[in-house]
Length: 135
Image 1: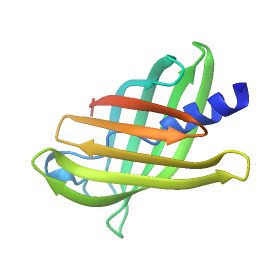
Image 2: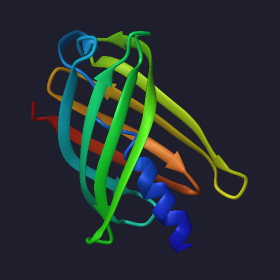
Image 3: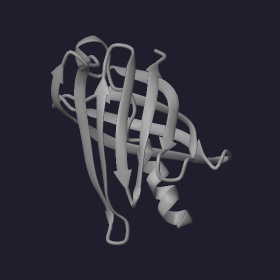
């Protein structure tokens, strides 16, 4: 149970804010976001930070850091795939296999000029991430 929760919380890091107006971080540029993750399954929550960098292929790379159980740090890197844009901002998704025991991690998120919000599902856990752009 503890291992499953820890992996789920590590995956929460996938949900960071990605870009600025128009949903695009300039190629080679990066944006930093801060906020919180929250597990709807367990009620746990904690701080989260994300640095999102635009790739030449139009996607994004992200490094998420945060804490769970108040003192346990985590970091997670992943690639983010844009799937569309609209009035609410740019839509991003992640799908990642976590191995035979934990299944997969899935995330969908909306990015707008000031913030990033999203939902995640992994290893029996579901939750949200809410981050604000800080630079």
